Image 1 (cartoon, helix red, strand yellow):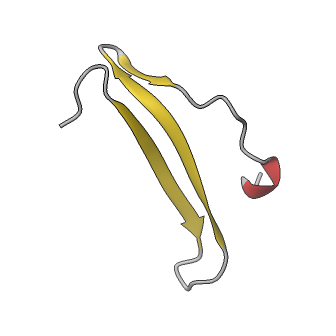
Image 2 (cartoon, rainbow, N blue to C red):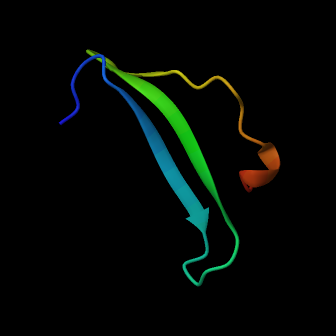
Length: 51
């Protein structure tokens, strides 16, 4: 159970379900009464976002 003022890392892995290369993205957030506050301020590399 998440509670207010907890700090957690939210991770996702994007890649093929067939295996091979992929990328793991992580954001650190603090749980607040209104949702969450992003604590990570370093941008993702645009080349890894597939845009």
